[in-house]
Amino acid sequence: MLKELRGAILAVLVLTLVLGIVYPVAVTGFAQVAFPNRADGSLIEVDGKVVGSKLAAQKFGGKQYFHPRPSAVDYNAAGTSFSNLGPTNPELAKAVRINAQAILTLEGPYNPGMSFDEIPVDAVTTAASGIDPHISPADARLQSARIAAERNLSPERVAELIEEHTDGRSFGLFGEPGVNVLELNLALDQETR
View (cartoon, rainbow, N blue to C red):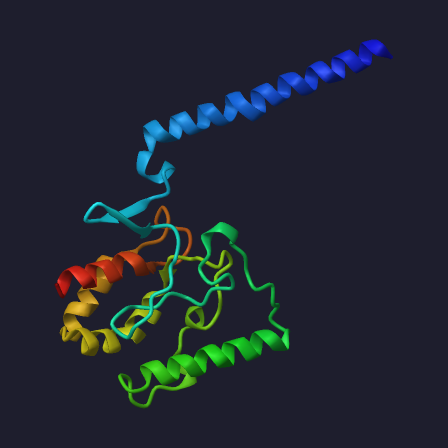
C-alpha cells in the first residue's frame, strides 16, 4: 500500500510540474513570440494610452458613437457571462421589448417610420460572453443615420467606415460578419478631429 501511495504522490507532483508549470510557460512563450499582440489582449492604444481591447466591448454613451450590443455584465470583462434567459422565458421577452423601445427612441428621429421589425436581433439581445466587441452590419447601418447627423458626416462616408471596420467570417466559413464597435468609433473620432 505504501508503494501505491508513493506512486500516486509522485504522479501528482510530476503532472503538477508538467501541466501546471512547464506546459503553461511553453504555450505562453510560444504565443508571445508567434502572436505578441493577441497574447497581450489585442489592446488598442491612442496617443500612447490604452483605450480598450479589440476583443472586448465597452460601453459608449452619446449620440455621436455607435453603441455595442446590450451586455448582461455591464461590459465588465473581469466577469463575463450571459443572461441565461431561454427563448420561452418571459423575462427575455421583457428585456427585448425594453431594449427595442430604447432603440426606437434613440434612432427614431434619424430613421423616421422605423418599426420594431426593422431592429436587428443582435441590437436587442445580449451576447453569450456579455462583451462581444462586434455588432452586425445591419445594426451598424441602423445606427449610421444618427452618426452621420451627429458628426456632420455624409451617410456615404459613414457607410465606408462601417465597411472598413467589418470583419468577415473566420476562414471565410465560420460565423457571421461583424463590425468592431471600438475600432469604428475610434475611426470616427479620427475622422472628425
